[in-house]
Length: 130
Image 1 (cartoon, rainbow, N blue to C red):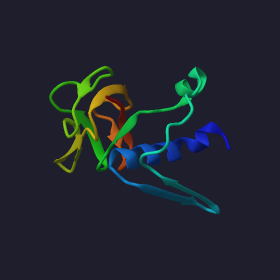
Image 2 (cartoon, rainbow, N blue to C red):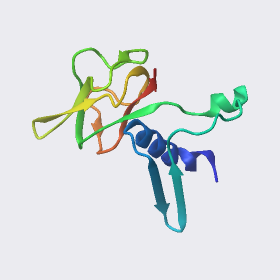
Image 3 (cartoon, one colour):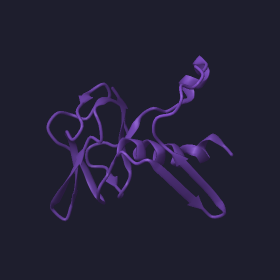
Image 4 (cartoon, rainbow, N blue to C red):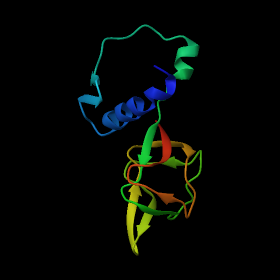
């Protein structure tokens, strides 16, 4: 399986972990995947290369379809955010839907700009937990 095929699995696991879920089950066609999240025995220390390949960021996703706009402090890489902090909003039909940070940390990447059209569930930014 190519690395890009694992991106949805990684995102689902990160989202589930950030929201406190204990188990995750994914199914696509004949493929099934199940993971149990939580405390595990201490694993072997990963190599530096393996550690760099892991994506420990948490996605910030759109809660609606519409146009993204920043609110308050600009959403930029390096910004320190707290859980629940409003990072922006998605506006549709004149109604604004707030986009809040799912956890505390540092904004690692911003994937949309002000005025961009976003779909429900689109990743707006990625936060590195602290």
